[in-house]
Image 1 (cartoon, one colour):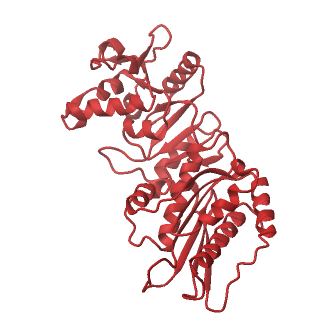
Image 2 (image 1 turned 45 degrees about the vertical axis):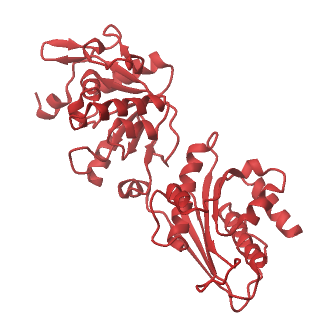
Image 3 (image 1 turned 60 degrees about the vertical axis):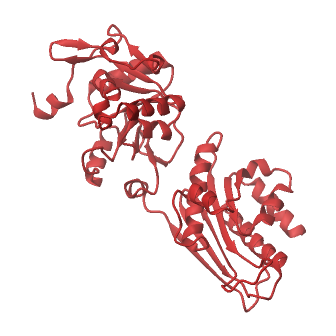
Length: 377
């Protein structure tokens, strides 16, 4: 027991914070972690998805097998993403998932087994344990799986655990470690939700954003965008980033080469957040509380039922969801033919007026057109 307490103390003393989910076994590891002072430095949250619907809700789909290496990795990925959202500040985070089937109050025909996975910024590690069925009672199997959970967590924290699992010749443990693909590949494949590319070229996967966002296609990035960012930053008192979705509503996803070309425009000058959020209610769910800086033409589309399949209810629901996520729209005027249109020309539905705020024409007016720039007009 002293060895366990000493290892837990080393885990608590490491900088990593984690969200841990255990199902079927592994709860003793949670008790060990909570039993040593400093657990709040390690654990952001503990989840116990015992019911099938709870597991489906956590990983976002129904697993082909609830106890498998793949499901453990799905849990670890889900808990990693929860950790990135729930952490305070910017500590390194990881997710851990355990799914197991062990001895219970009835005879089981299948194997007694456990799968543990950890997921961090760099890699996913999977531990698959086949237990010597009948050798241990439930308490003994629970202890073994919990020791494996503790070992996996320690290794993910960069600690070499001096822990004896007590495996026998009838037990079989396989460990697999796999580095993640490069960040952009992960975004394009859908395994991450956002990629923040800072002006110095550094990248952060699923990094919390505490800034206003200017969404756009940026074909090309031009002085109008940059001036709008400067004005909005002054109005709001926050940084302004650009947001580019690699997925479009009515066009094929952007190819990697095209994404890289558009990213290059921001190098050395601004931060761009790449996402797979092609609609504003998806952006709001991804970046709660962030103001969106948009032009008059975008604001008009936001409140036009035809952009929601001619379904006014769908449009109102989307606006309500955006409001619920505490996002707001900062609207800049745009030239429409010979007329300069402003927020006053946007038919905002009744009750949603506080969702929109205007950038006055006196503060910002830039008639540069991306379409004209592309056509060479």
